[in-house]
Image (tube, rainbow over the protein chains, first blue to last red):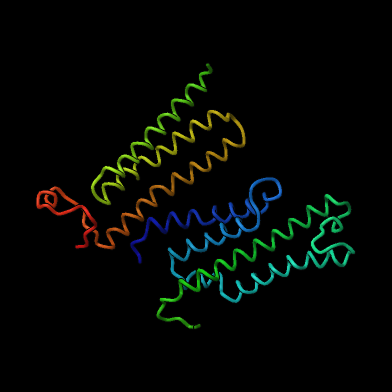
Amino acid sequence: MSDHMILRVVGKFLIPYIMLFGLYVQFHGDFGPGGGFQAGVIFASAFVIHTLLFGVRATQKIAPEWVLRLVASAGVLLYAGVGVASLMLGANFLDYDVLGAYPVAGQHLGIILVEAGVGLTVASVIMLMFFTFAARGEPEGESP
Amino acid sequence: MDILQILSAVLLGLGAILGVVGAIGILRFPDFYTRMHASGITDTLCTGFFIGGLMLQFGMTLASVKLLLIFMFMLFTCPTATHALAKAARHGKLKPWTRADADAGLSNEGRVS
C-alpha cells in the first residue's frame, strides 16, 4: 500500500477542495444550479476518495457508522421538521411563506433548511452504502 | 476583428486539434499503454487551450476565475488519473505489446504475463 504515494498526495490535496465545492453547490442552490442532493453526493465523494486511498478502517475512524446513521436521520428530521413547523404556524405542510416575517424571507429560510436536510441525508446515506459494500471483503470486520 | 477574438479562436482551434489527435491515438494505437500515452498526454493541454480560449472570451469576470479553478483541478487530476490507470494495469500484470510480439504473430489483445 505504501507505493500509492502520488495518488495519496494528490488525493489529500484535493479532498478539502472537493468538500468546499460540495458546500458551494449546497448553498448556491438558491441562486443557481445546485442543491442538496448534488451537494451531498459531491461531499460524500470526498470520503469515497479517502476510503480508496487509505482504506475503509481509516475513513470509518473519521466518519463512524453510528454518526452517519445519526446524521442521516437528523436530515430527514430537519426536512420534516420544517414542514411541521409551518403546520404549527397555521399553513400547509412545507408552506414556507409563514416561516419568516414576510413570504419571501420565509421561502428563503425554508428552502435553505430543507436543502440542508436533504444534503445531510444524501451525504451520509451514500457514505453508508459505500461502506457497506467496501467493508464486505475486510477480513477483520467487527460488525456483520 | 478584435485581437482577443482571434487569439481565443486560435486557442480553441488548437485545443480541438489536440482533442482530435488524442481520440485518433486512442482508436489507432495497438495496446493499452500506447493508447493511454496518446490520450493522457494530449488531455491536459487540450483542456488548457480550451479554458484559455474561453477565458479570453469572458475577460476579467468571475466566470474566468471559475474557469481558472477548473483548469487547476484538471491540471492535477488528469495526470493523476493516467498514473492510476497505468498503475492498475501494471498491478494487473498487463504486458506491453512490443515489436517482438508483433513479429511473433501475437495479437494486441490484453495479455497477462
